[in-house]
Image (cartoon, rainbow over all chains, first blue to last red; front, top):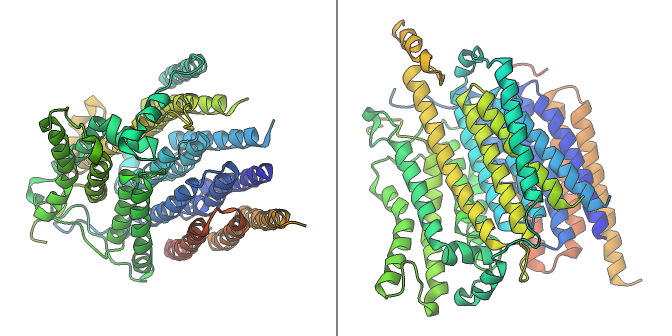
Length: 92
Length: 315
Length: 113
Length: 99
């Protein structure tokens, strides 16, 4: 069973890797914004499978953290790629 | 090759490809996106190394906060990239740099592989003295009791970094609000997210702090999650940063290190040593310091990312 | 091949790549990114040392792990300060170059408009 | 047949189905012609895949709290993912016709 869980984690990690390769290549920056999203779903699945396989329940907390932080990073991607979103400093 | 080895190999290759991308990618934004992915996936290696505490910190800081810090900088420095593109480094020097890096990496690999066996370890000492604090998480024990001076000074470093960042603001903005103001998203999607996610995030942050006594987690990891949620609300334009002259903000900033310092001096006063906790109260004191530390860490990290004062005090 | 060897190579490669990036990338922001990769490689080496020191019922030596957590905190403090310095440099001079001889012509650029 | 085998079969079935959806999402990401369709492939398939993986791991948790934590991870990802996809799509539309 543990073998199966690790194998499933490996398979999903490979899918995340392929997706990352596609997403990072661009060419539009919109494509790149999906990177954190990709890790926020596939990566968390890998993490949960690993947590179950290795019997480290605390790794689930890392998944919880990752789900919040991946969303946070994605928002920063969207705002960072379109500088018009950022207002000029008010004092100028 | 077992399944686990194949998995480790795949993970290592993926992380290394992302590191290569971050170093070699053409645009700064593309490189930063690679860095965020690298930071998030590095947490997986920490899990494989059995260091869940570090994995939590790395996921929260390495991928989340420092990635967002870099992204903001990349967005504001967009115009500088064309200017600096002309500054190329001669091929010969690149070759030298590559050789130097390769030699460094090789030396590191050999020295890690040549480490003495059985490895020297402080784990038995940490286990022996764990009863003194009655905390179940050995890493928290080391951080808060055995190496408490390090941890206290680490918080001081955070505060000093913030002082450094603030001192970079132009004189005319001193006392003003920190960082650029974010516009409220007209479609309201971001506002919606910033209203829904932080309540859940605050619960998670406090939970991570709370379990830190007996399981992986702690004040720093919890505080980082809280900082991320605060920054999310700022990015959506729901809240603004406090002015750098705000007394309340400054009070929160110094509360954590002060609590640490007071407990430390108390240990000295009771005649033992600086930061020596009386055994009967060790756990309560440690949890008290951590409790005081969570808001300080959240506010310090949030303001570190917000940047120096950027608007006049009147606005 | 054991997990330790794989991750040791990974850590050393991160240090090497980071070092290469710090030296060859002309853009200071990219240097900061590379420096963070270098740092994470060093942290990973600590992690391997911690893992090898697993004893007394712990999955790893807690002391290097605690050191790495402190290290990560100090790293982000320094990174935030470096980024703030860089942004201020760009704001003040309109350029982010680190070349010593470039300061003269950038100030001329600023004087022109 | 005892309960352990039943729960193992359930885990294998659900996790495999989840892995299949991750495969589908990646194929979509690699093959679809423009940003909006790629985004759609990524979000829908991957969120479903994560849901199935969580479902498959539920019988292996050691208590109600752990099970709730797993489910809340999925809900958080769904919530965040849905809204962020909207944000990315808006940004794609605003940035002119995606290639």
